[in-house]
Length: 201
Image 1 (cartoon, rainbow, N blue to C red):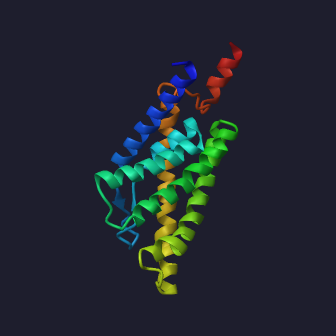
Image 2 (cartoon, rainbow, N blue to C red):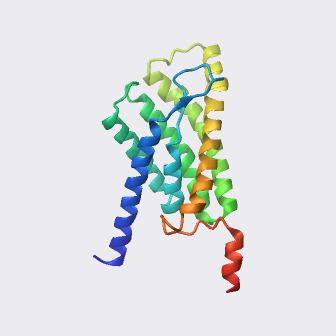
């Protein structure tokens, strides 16, 4: 087995491991007290997906998002006729893909933060559109009155997805800076002082 094959195998193993970690994190979901929709919950399963996307590219994040939702179906099943898993996949990709795309254009602390900001905007927009035009109709709630739909979007989806993106961004930023080299074997470029020191050697 040549060096490139070893790298590819190592990458696949780490993507699989991140997917498994994401499944475990999906069990630790919780509701937000001020959001009056009990089915809207937050978990941190997008953290492994974002870390994988930062390390290996946006498509790695998509694969982790897909695998974690397929695996959770196998081990836990679905209480929402697959709508919850579809929502998790769509919203997760809406956040992870733009964030990783910006970061990989020029890896630095600044682009990581800008990417996560773009991901936050995308998760809000895609979350609203996906719910209104796909998820609610599939779940049999497509005839929700306009006033109730506006309430659902403004005091449900928007604060939930905003808080989720902030939590995922903070946790990912703190963890990725520490494990990028030791585990993923990539330089996060988050530490500008380290780059300056390297440049002076």
